[in-house]
Image (cartoon, rainbow, N blue to C red; front, side, top):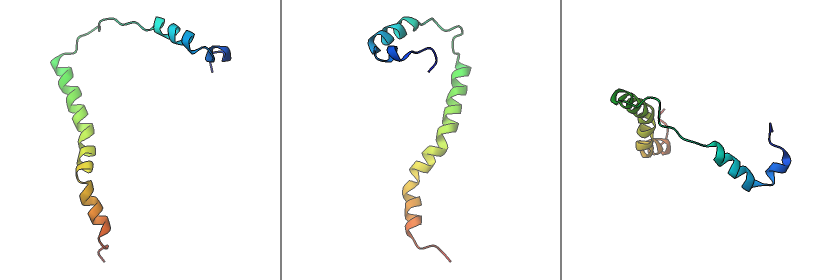
Length: 71
């Protein structure tokens, strides 16, 4: 289990407070520009479009499977 001893697993409150102490935030090093936003949006659309197509046409696929296969 690495550096976690079995005795610390029985004390979740202490683990939670230790974890909170290590979490901090800073402002980003570089701001996200319009070009980066556009590229990330295109990538997300490219990844989600095939799944959306399949889910949209799922009833048609179900009807095809219920029909008798063509010989």
